[in-house]
Structures are given as C-alpha cells and as structure tokens.
Length: 444
Image 1 (spheres, one colour):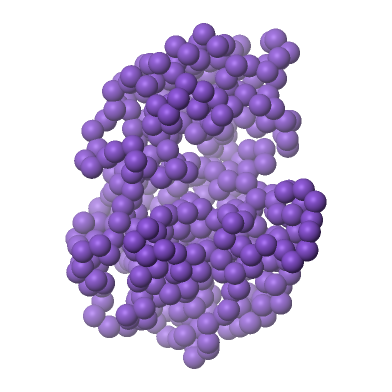
Image 2 (cartoon, rainbow, N blue to C red; image 1 turned 180 degrees about the horizontal axis):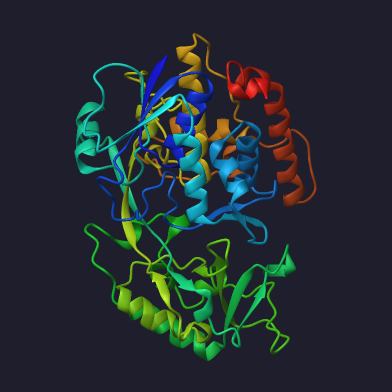
C-alpha cells in the first residue's frame, strides 16, 4: 500500500501520520527548505505562522471539542501540542518552535514515511495522492491544479495576517501586569492598560498608519477570524474595545479598576522570553508597527523579534469539487486537506488531514469509509466543506452552528455546548474500534 502526501504543514503531517500508522508507505513531499514561502521561516514541519494558540481548550468551545476528538484518535498534532504546551489561561497555546520540532521528529522517525524535499509542480499521473500544500501553495502547483480540476473559478482567495512578537524583557512591567480574564486559570497574560486619552490617540494613529502594499488586497477580502487590527480599527472607534482590546474581566492592580482598554500579550515560547500581541494581526509597514504599537504605554520601548505580516490564502470551491472525505469528486484517487479546502485554523486543518488520511488508508486496505456523523466536530467540518453553498463558499472555523442541536433542552449556553460535546465524544467512543482497525494504535 502506497500513497503520496504533498505538503508538510499541519494537515499534511496529520494525514501522513494516520496513513503510516495503518501500514501505508507514505512519500511525504515538502518544498522547504529548498523553497520557502513569504510567511515561513523554519525548516521544520507544521510551522505555526499566525499565532501559537490552538484556541479554547474547554468542551464548551467547539474548537475544544475538535481538539479532544483528535486527541482521542491518535493525532500527532495534538500529541505534540500537549507535550509543548505553554500556559495561556483557557486556551491551548504551544511553544511554536518546540511544537514544530516534536512533529518533525515524529514524522521523520516513522519507518513508513519517506520525506522528499523539493517543490512539486504537478500531481502524479497515477496512484493515490493527498494535496495539503496550504494557503500558500506555490504558483506552479496552483496553476496546475487550476487547469486540472476545472478551470476558471475553481480556486478562490482571501487575505490573513500574523501578529508581531516582542521580547518580555522589553515590556515595561511597571505599566503592565500578569492576569487572565476573569481570573480564569493561572495569570498567563501580560496586560497593558490604556486610559481613554491614550486609547483614542492610539486608535487615531492606527487608522492613519501606512500599510505595506499587498497586491489585490482590499478590506473586504480579509478573513474575519484573522483580521488585521488596522482594518478592525477603521470600523469604528470602539471596535477594538469590544475585540482584542476588551477590558472586561481585567482589573488594573495600580488602580483597582477596570481599564478603558487593554492590549494582551501571550507567551510564545516555554521560556517566557518572547510574547505575541494577541489579536494584533497586521500588515502595516514595519516602521509604522513600531511607531503605533509603541503608543501602548507598556510597549513604549518594546523590542520586536518579528513584525506582523500579511499573505494571500488560496482555497478551493470545495462544495463543487470535494466530497465529505475531502476527495475530488471527479477523481477520487486525489484528495485535499488543510486550509486550501476552506477549513480555517490550525486544529481544523489537522482535522481535515486526519479524516482524509484515515479514509485513504481504509480505501487502500479495502475497507469502507468511517461514517463520522454530523454530530461529531470532525464529521460536521467535512460536511460543511462538501455541502456549503457553491459560489458563495467561505472559509470557516469549527463552530456549534454546523453541529446538529440536542433533542432536549439544556439551560445555559455553556451547559448546552458541553452537552453537545459529550454527545460527540460518546459517538466517537462507539466508533474507535473501527477507526483504529489496522492501526498501530489498535495494539497500544
């Protein structure tokens, strides 16, 4: 049994892992380090670009449910994330460098995976192949796919951005403090308060700051879940105060009161030497980032180890092209996974790689696909991608809106969501024996 996986991002390595664990000989093709994208800096697999957070960890969050499903189903991404976790209140955040190193070691160390470095410019003429080249697919392969799978209109795009990173030592802790919102978990975030006057001056300069030129970029083409902070600011003076600079649940120990606005920073590595500005994705020019963000009092002398950047993301019109297992409807030997399918987010990308990899392995073993029902987050995501509105399809994070509601009433939104999660995990427990059939995990 053989298969080719193109791309060693989160989706590609998850797919390769699931295939290899089921005895499939995998050729994993990755163009790094021979060719790098504008957003990537490391030679390691599963490099986290935009943030080091895999978002909410609790089962009252849809992404928390998706992570728990993957965790219980032998996900290499969740295995590495749990091993390299850094404290982040109610979120699962990781040391991004150690996370990528752990994933890379696991993949390179598996006897059934052979890594081939170098750019792939066309799909293999025969054999089973899974394409997980991500939103930054090289131009040559993107052009080949466009011609191969349906011509004009087969691919779409949007823009997203990454947030800056600063050194902890350069943060003025006389003007900042450690806390988590509503004191949830441990005090994991650095909180930088602004008065009303400071915030208004910051907001005015942010709206007027000069942006780096990005071909084809317009405010309307950004992904809502990763919106540049300057785009958000232009929507109104108080937009940031209801978004990334929300002061709710935080009390400044200097005053004993809730600040007018707060910028939060989250640890980016296990040593705590580097922090990222939460929700401050941006495509301002580097000099403008330093000038404007330094108007936040605690960041007046901040040292930037990485400025924010923006990049174009390409994805497929998946409802027209793909089935619920991310296979190409016109040629099922070809499957896709990751953000190029229209799933949005690290965990969602891993989940699509998991499902596509498991389905391909089972097909090679002569077994039927696993029916992940819509009541599970993994199943709901695959069904959304394949059943969305053709021509109006937009990338989406996992959410409880695409999972069927309960058949009984539960008081309170958090309690209801937690009950939906429990239902999903119960369903998965009943499927685990079949999911793990033929896998190394079956005997562990």
